[in-house]
Amino acid sequence: MIMDLKHFDKDIYIWDKWPVAHPSALFSGLAYGKAEYIETYLTLEAYPVHTEVVRNLPIRHPIIWLMD
Image: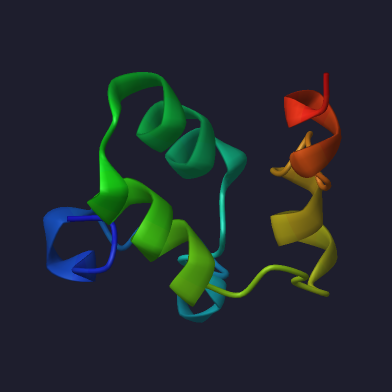
């Protein structure tokens, strides 16, 4: 669903910059054993450069949170 933008309201000014690899997809995929979430995360842009998109990604390097 995250890849299909028709499910979302087109009310943000940077509509064409989404979706990106949001850490919530990775974390929820690992927590709930959902391989499709992880696969989606891996296919999306990992390092966006638009300042508004970066501002909405509070965790930019999620692998750090997975290290033991």
